[in-house]
Picture 1 (cartoon, chains in turn red, blue):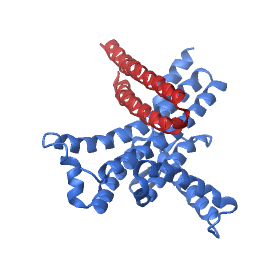
Picture 2 (cartoon, rainbow over the protein chains, first blue to last red; picture 1 turned 60 degrees about the horizontal axis):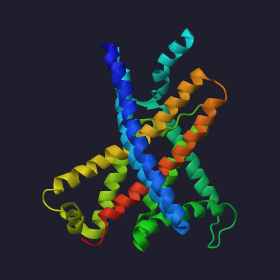
Picture 3 (cartoon, one colour; picture 1 turned 30 degrees about the horizontal axis):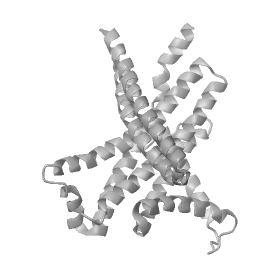
Picture 4 (cartoon, rainbow over the protein chains, first blue to last red; picture 1 turned 135 degrees about the vertical axis):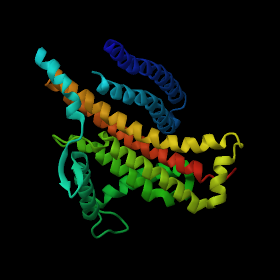
Length: 75
Length: 230
């Protein structure tokens, strides 16, 4: 039964990381396209990019916290 | 190899805040002590760099001027000239969280934002301040309208969103700093030489970004609650 808890912790880290990586990669790609198209807007784009990355990262971090909680309760 | 497994099992112990002394009945942990040290350093720097302050800055006065200008740039970008009123709150948040995160560079210190208490306190204070500031500035009626403006059905969701902001602000900062410290601790057990220090440097960069994000989000929440057209 404990094995399932370990698998749970691993999945709790892996799946959100996957989703976040896909989303953030997409965003960064589009941001680079935007900067390449219009270098004068680079500062604005960079600020918005960082803001959006933080939002996506936050979702991963929520599951990270749950995973840590679960990890400390095993055994 | 077996030794390393035992050490890895003790990682959790290293990551918990330890109580250093008791002020009467209240336990004071390393988190609080580090926060006090950071506060003292910031106060001293503020006093020293603004001694004999003049309109055209010279010497050390440039440091606070640059910092305030940097933050005011973002405030103006989001809210225009009326953002000037919120500069104290926003600048304090940025400088304080940035220095808390940078305290990781002191050998042996763990950043206080690694403790959920610190980040939760910061988030709760910030969101309450946003509500109070916006009520003071646009009046109770317009403030309430920002919740109800999208229809009756969405009003409870808007209220809930405000509470979720507390959770997300605190967990974002906590998760980043706690995660970095966890990674560095585990790396330290596995590869004690160059690698943990490099990752710690990356962690400091992330600390910088997280302080920036916290501040930027606060500015955007303020802008949303005090917006003028509805």
